[in-house]
Image (cartoon, rainbow, N blue to C red; front, top):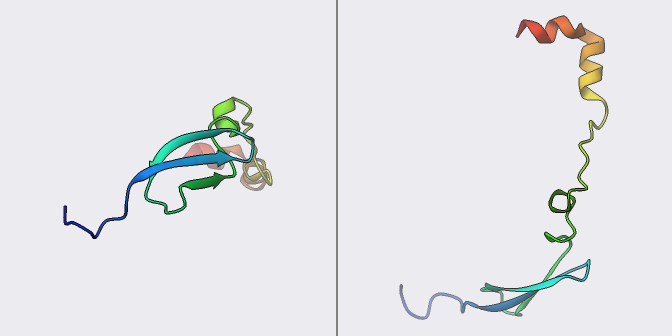
Length: 73
């Protein structure tokens, strides 16, 4: 690597809005990162994720074209 062109790689404290915090390494100058979600509060990681068919797209398609149109493909 060339000298004096890369930012300094320092320990950084990551703080989430849920109150969790952990230490990582980053080139951010302030040394702190504020996150809205993390692995402790994100629904995918906590097992509370629900699959939503927003707008009922599948049901709307079946109502318009019937189930036979989907089976032809």
